[in-house]
Amino acid sequence: MPSSAPQLVVPQLPTHLLRASLHEAHPYTGKLIIVEGIDGSGKSTQLDLLKKFLRSEGYTVFFTEWNSSVIVKETIKRGKKKNLLTPTTFSILHGVDFADRFARYILPPLKAGAIVLADRYVFTAFARDVVRGVHPDWVRNMYSFAVRPDMGFYFRVPIDISLKRILNGRAAIKFHEAGMDLGLHTDIRESFRIFQGRVLDEYDKISEEYGLTIMDATTPIPEQQVVMRAYVRQMLKDYHPKPFVDVPEPSFIAFDRDHIET
Amino acid sequence: MADDVPKESLIELPLTPALAAKPRRRPARRHEKLFFGEGLPYIDVQDLGGKLIVIEGTDGVGRTTHVDALHKWLELDGYAVMTTGLTRSPLLGEAIEAAKNGHNLNVNTFTLLYAADFADRLENQIVPALKAGFVVLADRYMYTAFARAIVRGADRNWVHGVFGFGLQPDIVIYLDATIDTLVHRVLNSDPEYWAMEEAGATIELLDYWESGMDMRLGRDIYDSFINYQKRLLHEFQLMSEEFGFAVIETEQADVEEINKRLRKVIKAIL
Image (tube, rainbow over the protein chains, first blue to last red):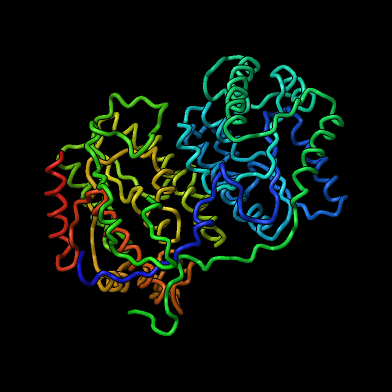
């Protein structure tokens, strides 16, 4: 190492903020509630009802959903359409979407003490991307900056019911939704069954691994909502919204304004 | 590796004993260890021939000039050559430009965008070229992405993990320079710029991103450039050690001399 090497001084983050973890509670006063499940599980409906309920109770509630960041929305859409996505690029692009939304729409409200609702979270990637063929450790590392949800619901639904619900709401199943890019089957419905079936298996393992609350998505909507609200009320018993102010100094600004080195 | 770090409020670089004691990761020959980490589990890597040659170095060191010259030289020598560089993926190119223009990215998002671009080029351009027996010249590789991310405060382990799907190069050549040389080259670089100036355009000396202005490391873009490039040079020094780069000093040598050295190093692994 040459003697002229610059002496860099990098402030160290306080230890409890150094590493976010999906296995340990976050230190912020806000609450993060997420829902997971395959399409047609009814999770979005339930989360929407929960949002209205919480707001009617006077809580400040923020909402974010999967694959909505403008940074990559067009790229993902175009990539899907022209079949340009590999399992790895598909996975990373959704990671970009999540990283952007996490930094802008999830973490700041959590720090400010608000409730954040997320339609799909990192577990979607852990399930889908692994079924597509990426390494499970690799995808978990990519999302390792994410915080652990205070409440995570997994809406469990059998394939046939999910298929029926999707086709009730839409004309057809989408190509990537059915895993057609993986060449599992020439018939789109069969492909859907195989692909989403594997995703369901992954979700079961993930619920175990990360302690998600499993919801029976086959019961009537109001019944599910009653159960969901009960869990959430319980979780909110220790909710005391006040802002998190132990904000660290930025780790990269380390210059002295009056004595800039040249 | 984050456990090595002392829990004081300030850490100082360069090498602490903990960093110095870190095991070195050499870029293995591809037949020893193919990937940087978990790799691409779903692709068949049996018939990967060719050679993957990486040329690294910060902005203004003359990398692109040398890569172009090497490309021509290799072709004259009878090799099929493909050159690839950062942010040239048709899938991601636009998104990266748009995101940069928006000045709105945090370091994780930034890093993942580069990773997506890199994955796209790796799978769609580099791997097929290697399978076809090409020599692939990479004008920059994962290491530039590492440096840019780490200098912005990204977790080192995380960044390395994200690029775990990357293919190990056959050789990494790092064109080293000091900060003085970089400034000198920036001042004298593009004849195109001066032509535009003659035609009436206003020239901006420095690029926003190449000056780390998203972090505003100084009172103006020049100060920021100096501090940012110093940090990058430092990161590259650390990586040269960690990953076993072949380092070529560009300080006292002219373009021809450097090119000769490059050719010598490359010939040795062909």
